[in-house]
Length: 433
Image (cartoon, one colour):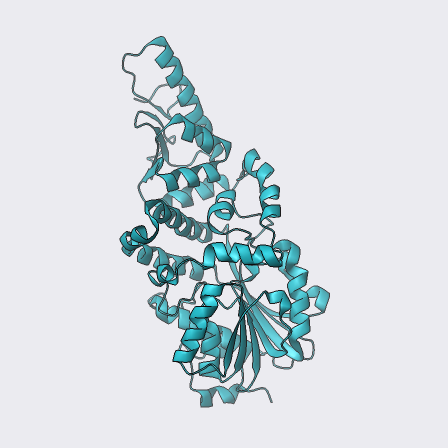
């Protein structure tokens, strides 16, 4: 029942011994502290299906059920890490929509410090261990991207594009939206037949192959992931594009190939804030005197590391920059920023497609890796959706160029002139004269 002294307090008051009653009061105090540390969201928190803390003046949108006091204490120590590990292990369950619950918590925590003292203490040490040196970057990439490609095939699109899509219409399928994204990037870069392109962080190769196949360019595509490069090379052979696209397994800092256009999609998140000038120097080294480039990256409004759980369990070494931080790629090398666009809603919708497909394949994923892995990736995908929906995550496309580049468009009209990839002949109409 709800007590008069605290309308958030719900508990069973059966006959108990003094020791049990003292234990229950302590547990209730812990529940209240946890609820307060989350910003008093509109959710119920339940311990062992007995003691409960609920929001004041509103019905809860979800119920977090905690199995034991130890888990409750771990969540108090660091809510994000504690919840993530407990949910993965099955010691915490969520009754209700997981994405909506996370959105509610993210919004309630937005006006307060979202990282506990434990996270603030451990975060710098973890960042040091996961630093993106040449050796460290390969290790970090291996942990995430070198999982069995058959796992990603279960829930990504047919070309294995592992970055935010572009929904020119919300009715597009995921496959259509990923093709639209790749073509959108090519139109922004104003690619012309015969040009040289360097693609850093090429993933499974879809964008590099798209550029060569539909725009007639020659591409050097680089990734630190062995599994991705093997897959991409096989796909290039199937499409008879091995002469147009070379897939290189190497660290981006070792690339010196000259190019007319530079592109990097979903890579800057793995560079690390201490290495932006390293990447800027690579761009300066490879980009032609009148070249241009595009960076697509997850970003932030203010400097803030990803939460401890994400970096420890899912994406080691990852960091999403603010626009100001991303400028460290361009300003030291005297590169002109031509256009900046935030595609945050598009990434949220992309993730919704991914999560839906992941849930449809969860039984197969469990057979491959076990039920804890399923819960870990479910939480990662759901949390990412919540991050983009609430605005704690952004999605930037940054177009830049050398000062001598003369292809800067008067307006964005040509970007929206075609929903689908245009025939090669039509693209030549837009060549810079």
